[in-house]
Amino acid sequence: MPRGKHVQHIVPLWSIRLKLDAKPAEDGRLALENALEPFGEAISSFETDNGKGWLIEVFCQAKPSARKVAAALKPLGRHAAQIDRVPDKDWLAESRRGLPEFRAGPFFLYGSHFKGKVPKNLIGLEIDAGMAFGTGRHETTRGCLLAIARLAKTRRFKKPLDVGTGTGILAFGIARLCKVNVLAGDNDADAVRVARANAKVNKLAQQVRILRSEGYRAKAVRDGAPYDLITANILANPLIQLAPDLAGALAKNGRAVLSGLLREQEKDVLAAHEAAGLALDFRIRLGDWSVLVLKKGRAAT
Image (cartoon, rainbow, N blue to C red; front, side, top):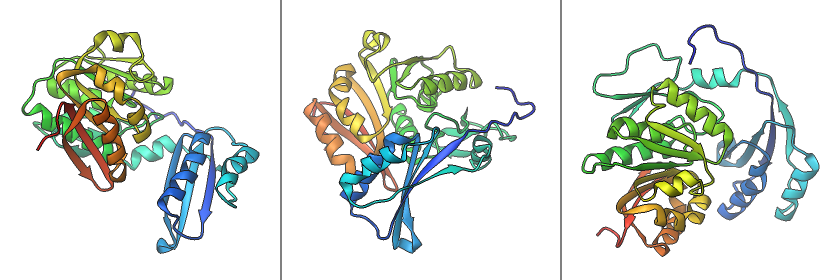
């Protein structure tokens, strides 16, 4: 990645803002978020007015149809969303400046703006904010890195797979920590492109193979099974849907590191994987988020 003169990259953005006068019930909030999420690339949902109100905001790369947004919200009550053009700004540069370097177990993560040195005895990974998910700073990504580090203390992995790789951060962490080649896939073409670029930046292009795959469907993914380590930091619903595929791809004594889920979603995600013949080995919780480490067979006591 060039480190010379910065070329300004202005990404046109639109926002859908839904303001609520009171904090919604959990089911109602999730229903509204699920209705609006398909319109954009990123969604945020949080309290306002010192807990008295709530705001759901979706950022879109193309102007959303007001008619379609209204139609999506209509079954959920009388809600009026506001659609606006977000002022032009070099959002990538802004977000990179706002992402300080940090440590997650044996990993040290930083952006291209970092001018210092990676601390001794730590594994440095350069990951910038971009179109793909995962700079490592979110609790789910950080939790996955901590789980991988914990597993690597007592196990030697030879054939890892990273599903929904995003920026590639988990695959890179595994490759460096375990000194092993990693197969990584994502169903989003932009994520594959970004992850491949990040692999070159981190000098891991030969160790981490990144391909387009819808879950476990790509031929290379199917042919490579079984895997002794599978990581999937995606979302609760896709994890539930992919549970049988994960069980089929995981080696007999392998481990799966799953995240992208809230604590309140643990029960449903675990139930789906238990039905597929997997069991909980251990979990890591950071704030409201959870990381589940699974194995085949009975749950740990």
